[in-house]
Image 1 (cartoon, rainbow, N blue to C red):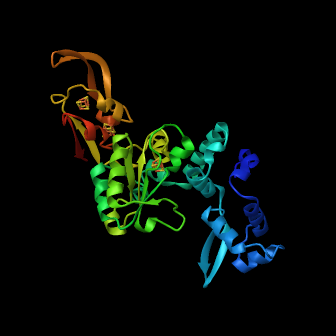
Image 2: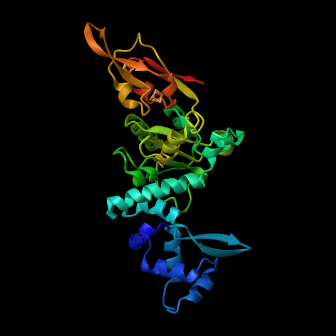
Image 3: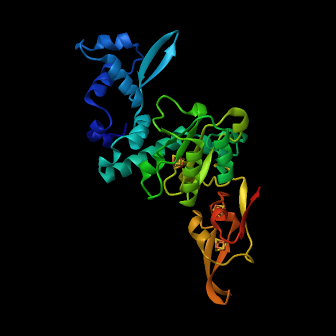
Length: 314
Ligand code: SF4
Ligand code: SF4
Ligand code: SF4
């Protein structure tokens, strides 16, 4: 846990949870061993353990037919608190420091980026490795048996934009007894996906072989908050991680220069080039397209009123 968070620890753990963690002293213990650590025998240990488990203060695992509890780490507790706790009562400066700490921790814990930078063929197997078109996520929703929506932890931590936040879709076995989100029908999930797309969020997720391996999760991301996309921009892994499989194709003949795509694209692949041209009898600001900056998210094509952009498979 970072030093600067210690004065705010009571926002993350209750007094009883703290006592539990101190008494466990880094050991892996059964329920009865934990109960024996408390002098107050009237205390409801089962309730405390369940609460601490649900809040990622402790983890549990079955070994040789017995259930063992061990203390969780602050990274997981922070993830849960920012999504489901009263996180925004913390001073903004502390939240900024937590975002920075968590981002650095995220990079340490996901060596996927290094695999990409090193050109290791194993990067194909990274999680969260594809940028999907909206139509592809619709296909995943159709295939899913269970769908849950959760708040986006990157946006809650980074707080760099005011876009939709309850947008992370978990599917099937990726949903656990600690996911804590809301179940959605397929219809609701499709609506949410469409709304996220309309509001300018890109769809990322995996695995690339979900049809064989099963569905996991799809995120609806912006480039301001999203840890994977921020890391990809910072480390220069564009196109490889998350992997792009499409590229926009622009037909200037069909374009009415409405400028919508210049606002939709997170990477300025569509932009005003500073010149003006005559279109429909009016002098208009000219729109240009730089394919080298395109990540293949499809946001521009989805809302172009004239069909001047199509997504081409790479
Ligand atoms: S990957 Fe994107 S949607 Fe998922 S948690 Fe991060 S920003 Fe949110
Ligand atoms: S959204 Fe379509 S019509 Fe509007 S500027 Fe972009 S390409 Fe042209
Ligand atoms: S130009 Fe590429 S990156 Fe930009 S919105 Fe279109 S598909 Fe996405």
